[in-house]
Amino acid sequence: MELILASTSPYRRQQLERLGLSFRAVAPPFDEENAKGRLQRLGTSPRDLAERLATLKVESVAATFPDAVVIGGDQLVSLDGEILGKPGTAEFAVEQLLRMAGRAHDLITSFAAAHRGETRLHTDVTTLRMRPLTRAEVERYVAADSPLDCAGSYKIESRGIALFDEIRSADQTAITGLPMVALTTLLRDLGFSVP
View 1: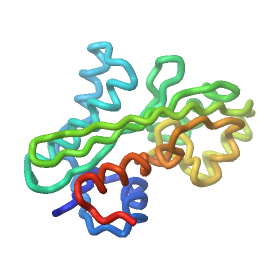
View 2: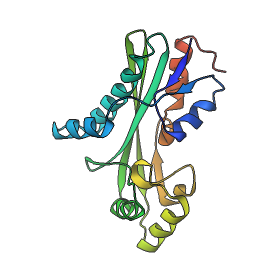
View 3: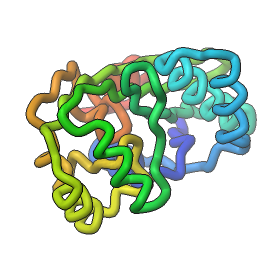
View 4: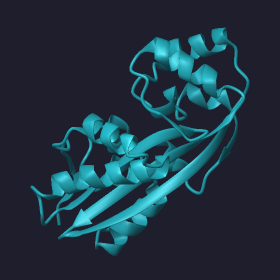
Protein backbone atom coordinates (compact mmCIF):
# COMPACT_ATOMS: atom_id res chain seq x y z
CA MET A 1 0.00 0.00 0.00
CA GLU A 2 1.42 3.39 -1.00
CA LEU A 3 1.76 6.11 1.62
CA ILE A 4 1.64 9.74 0.51
CA LEU A 5 2.28 12.83 2.59
CA ALA A 6 0.10 15.64 1.23
CA SER A 7 2.51 18.34 2.28
CA THR A 8 5.59 20.27 1.27
CA SER A 9 6.49 20.89 4.93
CA PRO A 10 10.03 19.77 5.74
CA TYR A 11 8.98 19.42 9.39
CA ARG A 12 6.18 16.96 8.65
CA ARG A 13 8.47 15.07 6.27
CA GLN A 14 11.12 14.70 9.00
CA GLN A 15 8.53 13.49 11.48
CA LEU A 16 7.20 10.84 9.11
CA GLU A 17 10.74 9.72 8.22
CA ARG A 18 11.21 8.80 11.90
CA LEU A 19 8.89 5.84 11.39
CA GLY A 20 11.08 4.25 8.70
CA LEU A 21 8.17 3.90 6.28
CA SER A 22 8.51 4.44 2.55
CA PHE A 23 6.43 7.42 1.41
CA ARG A 24 6.45 10.26 -1.04
CA ALA A 25 5.50 13.88 -0.51
CA VAL A 26 3.04 15.51 -2.91
CA ALA A 27 2.05 19.17 -2.86
CA PRO A 28 -1.72 19.57 -2.46
CA PRO A 29 -3.14 21.00 -5.71
CA PHE A 30 -5.38 23.69 -4.29
CA ASP A 31 -5.10 27.33 -3.24
CA GLU A 32 -4.72 27.10 0.53
CA GLU A 33 -4.64 30.84 1.15
CA ASN A 34 -7.85 31.36 -0.83
CA ALA A 35 -9.58 28.52 1.04
CA LYS A 36 -8.34 29.83 4.39
CA GLY A 37 -9.57 33.35 3.62
CA ARG A 38 -12.97 32.08 2.49
CA LEU A 39 -13.40 29.92 5.60
CA GLN A 40 -12.32 32.76 7.90
CA ARG A 41 -14.84 35.13 6.29
CA LEU A 42 -17.51 32.55 7.09
CA GLY A 43 -16.56 32.80 10.78
CA THR A 44 -14.98 29.36 11.02
CA SER A 45 -13.52 28.66 14.48
CA PRO A 46 -9.74 28.12 14.71
CA ARG A 47 -10.15 24.37 15.36
CA ASP A 48 -12.66 23.95 12.52
CA LEU A 49 -10.36 25.89 10.20
CA ALA A 50 -7.37 23.64 10.93
CA GLU A 51 -9.52 20.53 10.49
CA ARG A 52 -11.10 21.75 7.26
CA LEU A 53 -7.76 22.76 5.71
CA ALA A 54 -6.16 19.42 6.66
CA THR A 55 -9.10 17.61 5.05
CA LEU A 56 -9.02 19.73 1.89
CA LYS A 57 -5.28 19.12 1.44
CA VAL A 58 -5.59 15.37 1.84
CA GLU A 59 -8.68 14.97 -0.30
CA SER A 60 -7.16 17.06 -3.11
CA VAL A 61 -4.20 14.65 -3.29
CA ALA A 62 -6.32 11.52 -2.71
CA ALA A 63 -8.37 12.38 -5.81
CA THR A 64 -5.25 11.62 -7.88
CA PHE A 65 -4.11 8.61 -5.79
CA PRO A 66 -7.35 6.84 -4.77
CA ASP A 67 -5.70 3.58 -3.69
CA ALA A 68 -2.98 5.19 -1.59
CA VAL A 69 -3.14 6.21 2.05
CA VAL A 70 -2.83 9.98 1.95
CA ILE A 71 -2.02 11.91 5.12
CA GLY A 72 -1.56 15.60 5.69
CA GLY A 73 -2.19 18.31 8.17
CA ASP A 74 -2.66 21.90 9.09
CA GLN A 75 -1.51 23.89 12.07
CA LEU A 76 -2.35 27.30 13.43
CA VAL A 77 -2.08 29.37 16.56
CA SER A 78 -5.15 30.73 18.31
CA LEU A 79 -4.52 33.68 20.60
CA ASP A 80 -7.79 34.53 22.34
CA GLY A 81 -9.65 33.17 19.32
CA GLU A 82 -7.59 35.15 16.78
CA ILE A 83 -5.73 33.05 14.26
CA LEU A 84 -2.02 33.68 13.91
CA GLY A 85 -0.37 32.02 10.94
CA LYS A 86 3.13 31.83 9.55
CA PRO A 87 4.81 35.22 9.83
CA GLY A 88 6.69 35.25 6.51
CA THR A 89 9.03 38.08 7.60
CA ALA A 90 11.29 38.66 10.59
CA GLU A 91 9.45 41.86 11.45
CA PHE A 92 6.08 40.11 11.57
CA ALA A 93 7.60 37.24 13.59
CA VAL A 94 8.87 39.72 16.20
CA GLU A 95 5.44 41.38 16.42
CA GLN A 96 3.64 38.03 16.80
CA LEU A 97 5.98 36.90 19.55
CA LEU A 98 5.65 40.19 21.42
CA ARG A 99 1.85 39.83 21.31
CA MET A 100 2.10 36.33 22.78
CA ALA A 101 4.78 37.17 25.38
CA GLY A 102 3.55 36.52 28.92
CA ARG A 103 0.33 34.93 27.65
CA ALA A 104 -1.10 31.50 26.85
CA HIS A 105 -2.19 30.44 23.38
CA ASP A 106 -3.43 27.28 21.72
CA LEU A 107 -1.49 25.52 18.99
CA ILE A 108 -4.04 23.55 16.98
CA THR A 109 -2.65 20.68 14.92
CA SER A 110 -5.00 18.65 12.75
CA PHE A 111 -4.22 15.78 10.44
CA ALA A 112 -6.42 13.90 8.03
CA ALA A 113 -5.90 10.51 6.44
CA ALA A 114 -7.76 9.43 3.32
CA HIS A 115 -7.95 5.91 1.94
CA ARG A 116 -10.40 4.51 -0.61
CA GLY A 117 -12.99 7.24 -0.16
CA GLU A 118 -12.89 7.39 3.64
CA THR A 119 -11.28 10.30 5.48
CA ARG A 120 -10.31 10.17 9.15
CA LEU A 121 -9.45 13.24 11.17
CA HIS A 122 -7.53 13.87 14.39
CA THR A 123 -6.87 17.16 16.17
CA ASP A 124 -4.46 17.89 18.99
CA VAL A 125 -4.66 21.15 20.93
CA THR A 126 -1.55 22.15 22.84
CA THR A 127 -1.73 25.06 25.26
CA LEU A 128 1.55 26.93 25.61
CA ARG A 129 2.30 29.80 27.93
CA MET A 130 5.07 32.07 26.77
CA ARG A 131 7.21 33.72 29.38
CA PRO A 132 7.44 37.53 29.46
CA LEU A 133 9.95 38.64 26.82
CA THR A 134 11.63 41.88 25.89
CA ARG A 135 11.87 43.10 22.32
CA ALA A 136 15.65 42.47 22.41
CA GLU A 137 15.10 38.83 23.48
CA VAL A 138 12.51 38.30 20.75
CA GLU A 139 14.69 39.88 18.06
CA ARG A 140 17.66 37.76 19.16
CA TYR A 141 15.51 34.63 19.03
CA VAL A 142 14.09 35.39 15.56
CA ALA A 143 17.59 36.09 14.22
CA ALA A 144 18.86 32.78 15.63
CA ASP A 145 16.00 30.43 14.64
CA SER A 146 14.44 32.22 11.65
CA PRO A 147 10.94 30.82 12.38
CA LEU A 148 9.37 32.54 9.38
CA ASP A 149 7.57 29.42 8.10
CA CYS A 150 6.19 28.33 11.48
CA ALA A 151 2.73 29.05 12.86
CA GLY A 152 3.19 31.35 15.85
CA SER A 153 6.73 32.35 14.86
CA TYR A 154 8.62 29.77 16.93
CA LYS A 155 10.44 26.47 16.55
CA ILE A 156 9.98 24.64 19.80
CA GLU A 157 12.25 21.82 18.63
CA SER A 158 15.07 24.35 18.42
CA ARG A 159 15.87 27.47 20.47
CA GLY A 160 12.20 28.32 20.68
CA ILE A 161 11.83 26.05 23.71
CA ALA A 162 13.42 28.85 25.77
CA LEU A 163 10.43 31.12 25.05
CA PHE A 164 8.01 29.08 27.18
CA ASP A 165 7.36 28.47 30.85
CA GLU A 166 4.52 25.94 30.45
CA ILE A 167 3.38 23.46 27.79
CA ARG A 168 0.27 21.30 28.16
CA SER A 169 -0.28 18.66 25.50
CA ALA A 170 -1.54 15.11 25.05
CA ASP A 171 1.16 14.61 22.38
CA GLN A 172 4.06 17.04 22.22
CA THR A 173 5.07 15.78 18.76
CA ALA A 174 2.00 17.64 17.47
CA ILE A 175 3.85 20.89 18.12
CA THR A 176 6.17 20.13 15.19
CA GLY A 177 3.30 19.45 12.77
CA LEU A 178 2.01 15.87 13.10
CA PRO A 179 0.60 14.21 16.25
CA MET A 180 2.71 11.08 15.97
CA VAL A 181 0.95 9.06 18.70
CA ALA A 182 -2.40 9.28 16.89
CA LEU A 183 -0.76 8.93 13.48
CA THR A 184 1.08 5.71 14.35
CA THR A 185 -2.14 4.25 15.78
CA LEU A 186 -3.98 5.08 12.57
CA LEU A 187 -1.21 3.70 10.34
CA ARG A 188 -1.21 0.42 12.31
CA ASP A 189 -5.00 0.22 11.93
CA LEU A 190 -4.55 0.59 8.17
CA GLY A 191 -2.04 -2.27 8.03
CA PHE A 192 1.34 -0.51 8.08
CA SER A 193 4.13 -2.11 10.10
CA VAL A 194 5.06 0.56 12.60
CA PRO A 195 7.38 -0.71 15.32
